[in-house]
Length: 146
Length: 266
Image 1 (tube, rainbow over the protein chains, first blue to last red):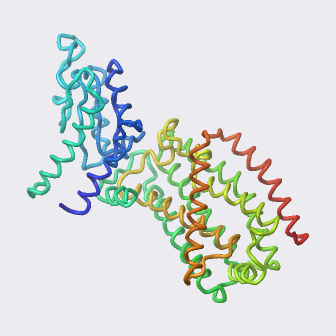
Image 2: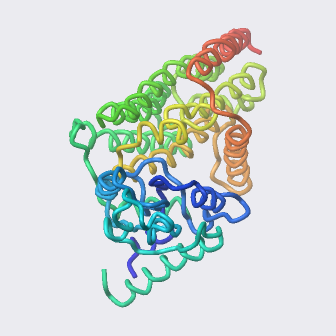
Image 3: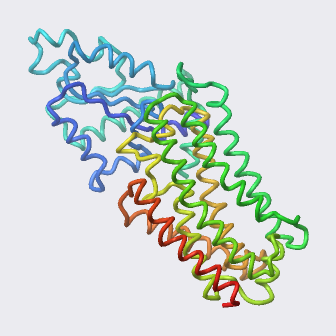
């Protein structure tokens, strides 16, 4: 594993995108930033600008209004970039599965690296998911894949 | 190790240039800031290690070069063509206007105490002979003002309106990514060393590089950074008009009193 890749995994900056969720997942994610759960010990930092971000955290069902905006935000993220889907709505549309306004789950719009299920997932589950993201990426790079 | 990891990671990231940006200025601004901090660190170390071997007027050069990083942030903000970045850049410009006058007056105190010499070497030798600047009434007052101005120069809370993360999402830096953002981060981190080091040289007699003096010098630096961090963690963000009122009101008046005290040999 190269120096740059190592540094990348130790300093993942996170951009939080809520695509019209009910705010439960957002609250649970914001709990991760508090001193009690503290994801900053993994070098993660919440950024306000998508241009600084390495990880796009998406919460909420992907509705028609949001699809072009999600695509645009994903394109604005500098490579290498990762996407994490948080909550049942982003994973599989949750209770909105029959809604006229939610045509597809998130991974039909942009590639998703980690799925964190739950309605909402506990902060511990979100941390576990993010750690799995780091571990899987480490495993990929040690096998020689980019 | 976290700042190192952050900068290394940013070096490995893609650099995006917005369509609406003035690309040449956008690319040049972070490098101008970084280079000026490097030059100022070199001047400070040379005058600290060899006070006899400095040139006349280096105090003015140092003050000027310490201003350039802020100006590079203004340049980069306006060049990136983002409304939030422009807002941040205009705030940074007002911040420069507010802190620069008390900062220069505070440095003037040390110049007056060194018999009106504008050489860092003379300021250091005067302090070696007559005791440190901060031990006098005028010097202590000037040190206080310089620490507040350092806080503003580093754009830390309570003077972080140009980069207010929660309000205008990083403001001037919003469009910067990859290597250019790394240059800005590196510039800020180097400034966090250079500015306290400048204060140590001008007010606290510099760092002598032998034995116990080296320990004292390091402790002085750590104490200054602790004070800066303490101010940052115990204050809310000020509005721009409050910042202007703070620096042009109490700080400038205190600085003028300090200069008058220094002229009266206190």
